[in-house]
Image (tube, rainbow, N blue to C red; front, side):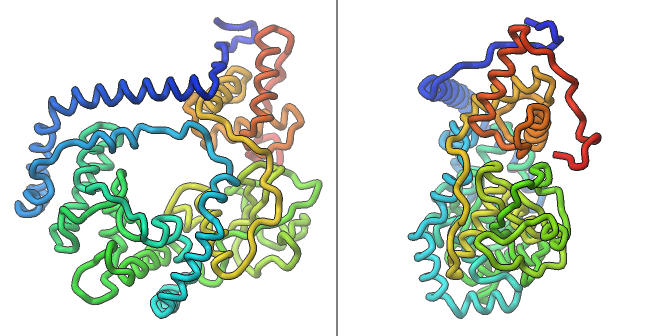
Length: 436
């Protein structure tokens, strides 16, 4: 139905957690059933055509025989590719599961055990040993969980299945080139379901562009050679633009009158300007002496910790496009170096489910705050819409989808549907000093 405001109003889904889980289970079963029927039909035809293309691209018959003979699509890979997290993870939960006392202690022991290697890598590339170890810990728990799925089979499954087909087809060709070059046998090329492999979980294209033979044995072994793995990771970070001597992120305290609209990765200011606004290092002390610009991010909203992020934050984001991941790298590196954990409280507890995010996006759209097509993903467009809504309703405009925000939006949406609310025009941030 369409309400008198000209908005396409649909009832918000009132699913409980059990209902969401059941719905997702049914969708997954249907997807796997369709996959089974599809698999029997044309994977062989697809593989034969791909093999011809790989031969044309210069891949040897020996490699194609070793990697593709008797290959079948892997249902587990399709399941993992289609699985979405049932509930979003708060920054506090994300960090608490990845930066633990055990993780720190294990990393410090690894740094001590391989001190000569880490010292040499840091001297050559300018990447702090604690940062490199933090990546190692987050990616594979210091090499203990590197993945056990065959990379060519996983990539072939994803390339054939259709979703992001061109990307995975390209990765499969690169994986075959790595085998063809003699770096690893096809049967030993194992890793994650999506094709990441080795101590630092390189994709095949990343391997070919950045991996190096550091131990001088004429092949690059990211699974068994720690020198190859660490030099390759450092080479990637250096070539991605790492700034030696500068941090990734530090926790800061913000003044009470801070304009929350300024807390965005894209809003960069020189440190002197942040200092003039009252931003200080959390727990006291001076801000680092950094020549470039910095931004403020609020990974769990205005009530949670605040971080100042620098150019090296962008470098980490090129490795993994997740703010939580980049901040976890910074926090783990800090604690590996003997520093403490967070000073601020975690922020508002609770995380929205994917279905609740879709409902939030739907409601915001119907209230005139454009999030794009509701998809359950918290992209920049949705965050911008949340900030606009928060400004209109005199809420701290942090762009964070807290449970309290969802409750507020649902209440306003219900009033609009009932005709009890007259909607004011949604302001454009071009009319305000800071954009979301």
